Image (cartoon, rainbow, N blue to C red):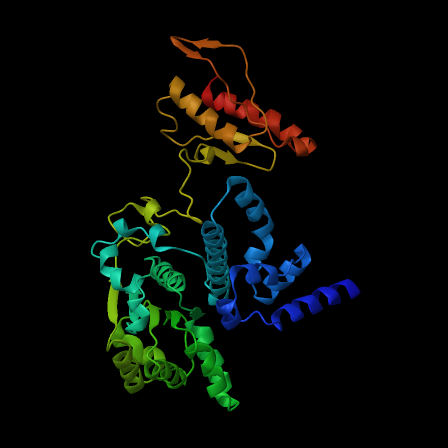
Length: 400
């Protein structure tokens, strides 16, 4: 602690010394060389810490050794340190602003699939990817059905604004309105509004997805109007057409006033095309419903099995007795392929073991595989008695 205080005192004496710009200009080179103090590594680190040169403080010793070995000019040594410090500060600011933006997920404009959009192209968003987007307060409304990439595009534009040096905040519309509404009831609306009016860019995500309170239009108008007066752009994403905003916000007049301020220097973009979440699975010409089987059977997206359960040919007489079905037309063509198909069906129903038996000949047909039925071997005692009966019944049914 004492040693650190001594270093600090020497640094303070150095800054309080006579080495000002005026004295340096008047001094001769010999005097200037004599007046430069010889500082230790700790003292140099203290100076860099005082100037908040974090990156330079970490790398200056290594860079200085490299410059001496490679005989860098003084100018190159200084430029290298300054470039490293500026790059480090830019990266730190980018990480800090991205964390403060509260994006629901991180996406960039390069990751957006414009091929799914029949009309929209990246060139159409050129002005929103430049600093002019903020300077000229160009607001934006992204409209489309679910899965069209509205939030992805809003996050990408917000992140590009951060890269251009501006602060961005992303907020869910329902949470924003609810927070402002609660603050208004407590008489703290102005304090709450500062959170949403301070950032250069605000993303209000998912207008109309969830039901809003009766005073939604009132508090949202305050936020939009304050940002309008401060000339700061706002990005909205919504699945409702503009004509429905009055019903969503419970006030037609205030909804019209909000849209009037947003679209004065803003744009309305309609995102179309298939859903980015499920479009790769549907492949049905843009239809938005799940495909159904001919008989309409679907449970949690699973179709009917390829081979129906063979219970139509067998009737359970009791819990332990099976008998052959006497229904006319049952298995009219008992070919080898049919028997194999039925055997595979029973085999898939009881999947723990396969049973084989030597080849049998029935006329010109050969039965090469007999898929017996066996219950789960974790319940052997329960299925041991039934297995013999089922095995005999299936053998009789298939005439194996």
